[in-house]
Amino acid sequence: MDNEIEVAHDAMLQLDKIDREIDALDAEAIASPANIDEEEALLAEFKTELVATQASLKAVQERQSEQERSLTGVERRKVRADNRLGSLGTMGQIEATQREIAALTIEAGEIETSILETMEEVEELEASIEKQETRFERGVVALAAHKSGWNSRRGVVESRLAELKTAREPLVAVLRPDVLRRYLLGRNQKQWPTITGITWALGDRVCRTCHGQIPARWVNEARSHLAYHACDGCKRMLVPDLAWEEVAKAAAALAEAQEAEQAEEAPA
Ligand SMILES: [Zn+2]
Image: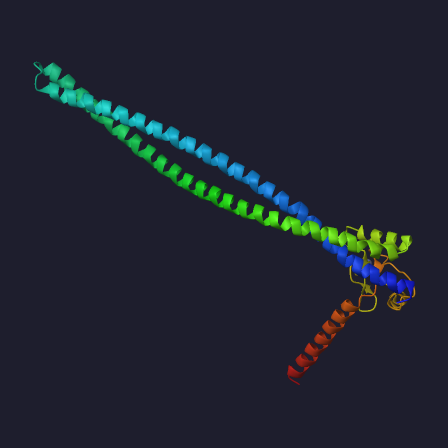
C-alpha cells in the first residue's frame, strides 16, 4: 500500500472500529456504576417503606391490645353486675342493674367489632410487610450480584480501554492533520444514529449513514483511493468498506434470488 490515501482509508476503517469499541466501553464504565447507585437508592427507599409499614403494624397491634384490655374491663364489670343481681333488694335496684348489664353487653359487642376490624388491619399490614421484605431481600441479592459482576468486569474494561487507546495512536499518526480533523468532524455529528467518523455508499451513491445523495464520481474516486471526500449530509469521510460492499452485494443477490423464486411460484 504505497498510496497515501489508501493507507489513510485503511487507517480510518480501523480507527472507526476502535473508536466505536471505546465508545461502548466508556458508556459501560459510566452506566454500570450509575445503575448500581440507582439500585442502592431504590433499596434504601424499599427499606424506608418497610420500616414505615413495620411501625404502622406496631401501632395497630398496640391499639388492638388496648381494645382487648377495655373488653376485659367491660366483661368484668358485667360479671360483677350479674353477681350483684341475686343480692339486690328493690325492683329499682334490679332494673338499674339490668339496664347496666344491657349497656355493658352493647359496649362489649362494639369493642369486639372494633377488635375484628383491627385484626383485619393487622393481617393486611403483615401481608404488606411480607411482600416488602421479599422485595427488599431480592433487591439485596441482585445488587450484590451486580456489584460483584461489575467488580470483575471493571478490570477487563479498563485494560481493554488502555489497549485500544494504544492501538489508536499509530492509526492517528498516519492521518494528515486535515484528514484527521475531517474524520473527527464526522464523529461529532451527533444527530445521526451511529457515532462514527466514516461512512460508505449504499448501492452506488446513497450515504449509508444519512441516506443523502453522494456524487457517483466521489464514490468512484474514494473506491480507487484517488481523493478524500466526505458526505455533504453527515460530514463523514467516505471510506470504501469492502466488508460492507460484500454484505450489500450478498443482500442484493439474495433479494434477486427471492424475486426470481416468487416469479416462478406465481401462476402464469
Ligand atoms: Zn451521509
